[in-house]
Length: 210
Image 1 (cartoon, rainbow, N blue to C red):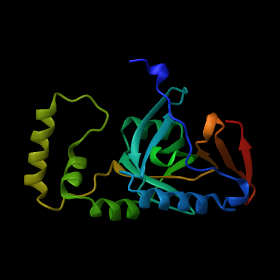
Image 2: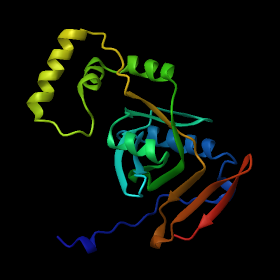
Image 3: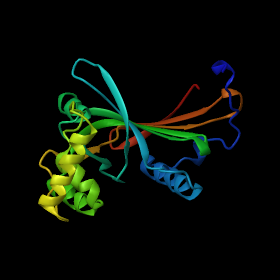
């Protein structure tokens, strides 16, 4: 297969400054609603990029579980690789890629844990299997094998029945945005890239070269 020959022309839409919302959260909300209506599978899937204290990067896909004026929320194990990196270097980037709409959104900012009450509320809303898995998984650590995890899951099911408690080391994070980039694919690779950058209590909008 000739990977260099794999190409796609972007023709769906453009992105113009006059059409942007003054508030990037409103702009994101509009695009997210369009992604929901489009039928894209898991429109809330996003790449979370973190880095160690020494600057070694890592990335993985997680799910957005809420957003408002305070920021963007996702959940994880606090001692996972991303959890350890966020503890040492509490800044991150989120990247949404909605290929069917030829759009991407990047969001950068500091990250902090949500309250225990928020984590408890979300944990209680998860399917039982997901809650049980969270109680037994030492996320990102080496394990003996799949069977060892399944055995622990069975033991947790017998122990907790249908009411496993939220593990102390499992909970939510909130990224407080300082920068947004909205990317719209365009013909001839002359893509639209419009950024919101925090400026005092408001936002400054800039266009970047594609």
